[in-house]
Image: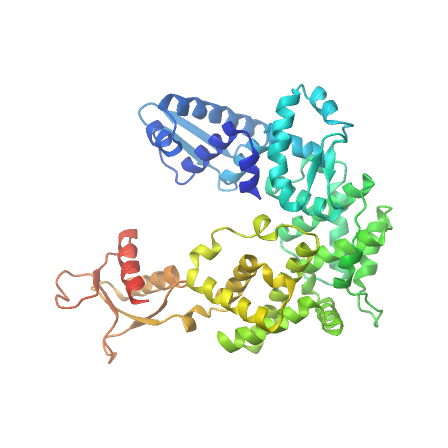
Length: 497
């Protein structure tokens, strides 16, 4: 989502963000010529953008926290210093928040203007610039089947889609802030106490702060939209939400969520079901063993497509890839079930899921695994033609994540033997072995062998010249091992793979 917000921002802000990403790669001096070459601009233009960036950093430090320093030195260039409690995305978000196109989107989502003309007049903007901003904003809104209604200054589309867009928009833009300004209509303390009540009532162990914050964002968006009398209709999605019966002292999810919404004078059942569905797509709710068991039993009982797809996946995965241990199966099943549930929800809402969610580089980094997972999806399609299998990219990504988490790449990749023969102390050799294993663990199945090993190694790493004159695959390495050594090792490993 962040990359899509950058694309609809003003071209000048896009250049500023490009420069930020360049100078944040490492803490060193960057010359103006280097920056100008990277962004295809003249030295003079680059200097103007750097001066603007300097002012932005000062403004950020004054308004928020003193996390950044932009040093400028003659004959050296510029250097960006970043506090350990921050990262460059804080500055990127700050630039986006001040962008006129992003401000228009924010106003559409949270402000009350009667018409687009009213918005233009109150913000001293011309009609032409507003129309151009609308065109850009519609590019990203179309991914969620939404469009700007200029006449009434609001978004056209299903309320469920609007909320999913708001959540993605707010989390991308404001996740580094304690409580966004656009949320001020709702008390942060009240929302936090509501979520704590939810976790305590369901006996869920402590959720990490980031996941807790995500749930708070979601609940806040629900409350804000309800206050605007924008009610969600989720009758078609209700079938994914189980209705719990009272059993002894076990918690009843729908009752607990109803209590939270009733506290805010919201009694609409569709709202309650929609929020529960959001919870069911995340991992936190499944930390309650009772809730988890009932969710899965319910989907099994009604033979939902989500459950069918999950069962089918594990049958094919274990037959064609590897069996999953009893210890890991329960967690793995939950992960894939949630993945299928989320895809099912997005398909129901007619959202271009793959373009709005998945990480663009995941499949590129794991081409072999990606192809294998796509084969599994094709096998599933042949056995059961479920609509959720059409989301090939996202499902491949999730299946790869499971594959890597179970450490199956060791079984799947060819075993490559390495012999380490150096004059370094044993403690250094142990460090080198561990470093190389960790560095290549997702791409290669490596094993280090000793001198007594009867089989000839695939690769020899040594520290002395001319030690193995007649061996084909020998690399002379140093301690500590450097990037050049790793590059040489990778070339040979690629050849052996």
